[in-house]
Length: 186
Image (cartoon, rainbow, N blue to C red):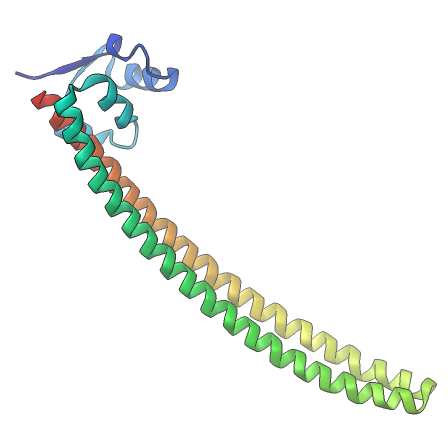
């Protein structure tokens, strides 16, 4: 026999969840696994489980939810590790380019500074002629390397978010299905 959830059973639920229930289902809905999958992202399944399931059904729901949560955390942690690895490699590449550019700049600057100290006015003019372009080149190289780092980091972040969002959606579906099955067998 199909089981239903009535809007009146959600009296303690938050306004948003009651409003959403009313918009999607009206005053009541027949519970099914297929329906639970379709609305997995929309409802607070932990609240529903705590308030609508018997103790044995709630225990079964919690068991399935905890396994799904552990799987989500595993996927999220792997994605986070991948993101950190890619970001760190990109940062290391940036640092290498920056350090080489800085070394070149320092070499040019130090040579110019030695000339400056020998003949103050003439050296100052030479220093500016040599260092300003070197500084400009240093900045250009660093800015390009930084832009590359940000691109790689942002792509890695997008991959991390995509993996986590998919894992989160799977987690929500598992919870929704677990709730529906527990509710239907309760």
